Length: 195
Image (cartoon, rainbow, N blue to C red):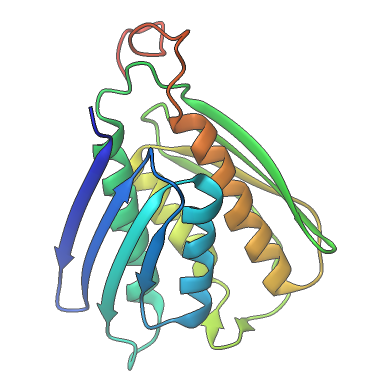
């Protein structure tokens, strides 16, 4: 069974179409109008081995908030749809990624209970024209709409670009582990019998 999803979401602020294949090769086509954000989303695809297409048009004349948050919402919805009933899925994932002096760990439980523990200290308000505070908004939207428990922990780092990039890479690798099918898992990976 293909573990794929396509979600379209249109509001007065954004118009987004997103496709994901959890069992892909890391291929991507991403255009949000925000260069640094596009760069981060390519890491989700490449390091998570997800095929990911994102086309987003937002009210960037206002600011980047609606676009970044809404892409997070749509990605979360797509992840939730693509995993289906989660039968045979590993459920948990953990990865640490370095980026020069920065080091970030991501730990995921795809257990249906949304929670974000955001432990990044990003020292600047901007990377290029990207508002760095939107990093938290993106991950919060993903966790809430996918039903993820995500902990992000920064072990080191003083360059904002490096810290955020390490976080996206660690998230991608942890998400790959959590969504991976495990032949040892029979049914849903929960003592409750449902997730």
